[in-house]
Image (cartoon, rainbow, N blue to C red; front, side, top):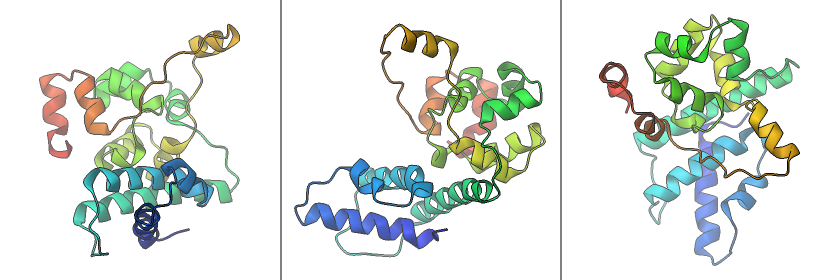
Length: 201
């Protein structure tokens, strides 16, 4: 497994390539890195590009360190399950094993139902999901935190409508993957839900 410094060093390498005049897309750069860290590395690089990096390497900010730590924890959880040869279960699988509906689990978490559904569709960037939510999911689903982290990186289920559209040759617009904060706003939360998560938004 890569340590936290790997993500920061990779961001500096990508910036150096761009500054040297080499035209390389973010996807092409990430594709050269180890498969188990690509998704989280891409999110980390997007974060850096959005903020803008200084010309000279400096000590990472607390926000950058927190993001790198979260990316590392997610990748580590997925890597451990792969090494043990365990089947990959996504968040939907874990919820169904407990015979919970999306609505019931959302109420337990004080989350908008549409936000939890979006999480299950894999359309919320994993590195932006609050640690407190990961811990509460683990409690609600009676599952280790590491299992929740691995589930957040697992491929989401394919919906019946998506399968039908694929069979019919219909291409639906791609749903954007957004941050947890953006997904929370998009889900039109109630006052109770806002209060429950205001400290992490």
